[in-house]
Image 1 (tube, rainbow, N blue to C red):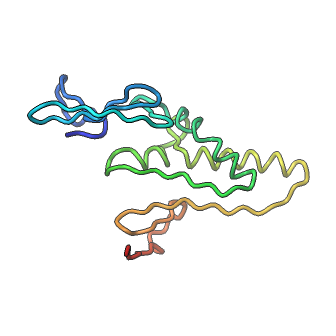
Image 2 (tube, rainbow, N blue to C red; image 1 turned 60 degrees about the vertical axis):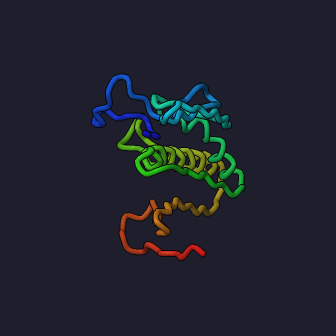
Image 3 (cartoon, helix red, strand yellow; image 1 turned 45 degrees about the vertical axis):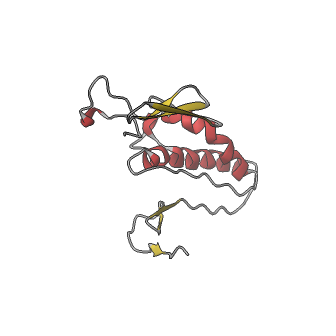
Length: 154
């Protein structure tokens, strides 16, 4: 069964559907094919359909950025199977409309920083964006490949 939406390069037939289907902004259904078709319904705080724009996703989570600017610790967790779009959602591709959550968040922090500096504020910020894949932690803001840390999960 296919979890993520089909891509043009997948050569999926017109009648084929992925097994996870968005029903609304807060619900999706899971369809399993077997001897009999089974459907399971799930509800969430927010569900984005395959055609959702990067801007729509960022708008939904932008309050986390404001909370961080207000001094709260913030964690945005992206989870899913390989090739389901986590990296694309978080990092995006290129500039403009295809920017992901990370570059949009950094941009918003930069704008806020300029506003406060114009008012005489001085402060220090620390930011990290991490990826955990196969127990390897990778800092997404570092360009160097060294520095990856392997952790045993017990």
